[in-house]
Length: 375
Image (tube, rainbow, N blue to C red):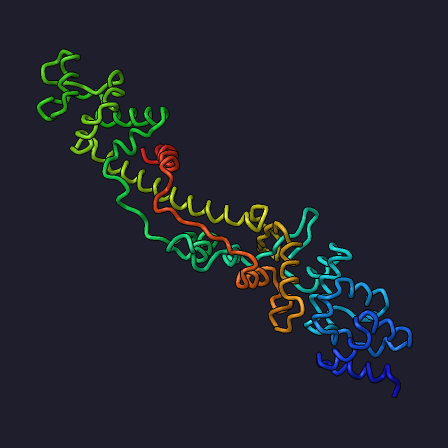
C-alpha cells in the first residue's frame, strides 16, 4: 500500500480525527486534492467526507473541486446532506439565475419563474397566513388566525359591534355630504312634507317659530323651503325621530351606522393583512384561470419580493448541518422554507396591532356610501 492509499483510507473513513492526520501532512484540503489529482486517484474521492470546517476555511474550495473534475457525473441529489447547501451556494455564486431555476424546478416546486420575477403558487389564498406571527407581540389577537380568516373564502369571523352609536343625529346626519343631505330632505318631505302639523304635539322651538313664519295659528308644514333648516336643527330632528313621525328613519340611521362601523372595521383589518404581505411579496394576489373540462379553476399566485435573498439566507444558515430540516427538499416549498427561517429567527413573521376601533374618517365615508341604499 502506497502512502497515498493510506491517506485515501483516512479520507474515506469519514472521521474527523482521521482527516486531521491528512491535514498535519498537507496543511489544507486543496493541497491534498492536488496530490490526488497528480497521482490520478480522483475517482477515490467522495467530497462528502470533507469536514464542514474545511468548506468554511476555504470559500473557493468548491470552485477548485468543480474545475478539477471531482463533480463530474455528480449532481445535487448524489451528495450527502451536509454538503448540499455548500453545493447550492457554489451554484448561486457561479450562475445565480441557473441555480434558482434548478431550485424552482427540482426542490421548491411551488415557485414559478415569470419574466418579471419569482411567483409563489398557492394552494389557497389562506396559505399566506403562514407568513404571519402565531402569537403577536403587539396585541392579544392571534394575527395568523386573523390573516387566515381574512384570506379565506368565508372572510373575517368576529362578533359584530351592534351598539355603535347612541346619537344618530350627531354620528350620521351631521356627517352626511351634500348629496345625501338632499336625499334625506326628499325622504322627510315624502314622509311628513306639506301636511298640517300642530305645535301642541311638539316641544321644539323650531316648530313654534315655523308656525309664526307661516302665519298659521298653532299649525305648520314641513316644505321644500324649510326642510333644510329642519335638518340643521338637532332638537327638532330628534323629536321627530323619537316620536312616531320619523321613527323608521331613526331605525334606518342606526342600521347605516352599524354597517358602516363594522365594514370599516373589517376593511381596516383586511388592509393591515394586505399591507403586511408587502414585507415578503411585491404584488397583489393574481388569480390565474384554467379551464378544466366544463369548470374554470383559479390558482392564486403572488410575486415574491426577494426570492434570491430568502433562499440564500436558508442556505447560509444551514451550511454543514446534518439535520433533515437543514436542506431545502425537506420542506419542498417556499412557504415551508420561510416557516423554518421564522422559527430560527432569521426573519420575523408579519405582525401588526389591531386597533380596537376603526378610523372615524372611514366610518364617515362608509355612512355616505351606504346612505342611498337605506334611505
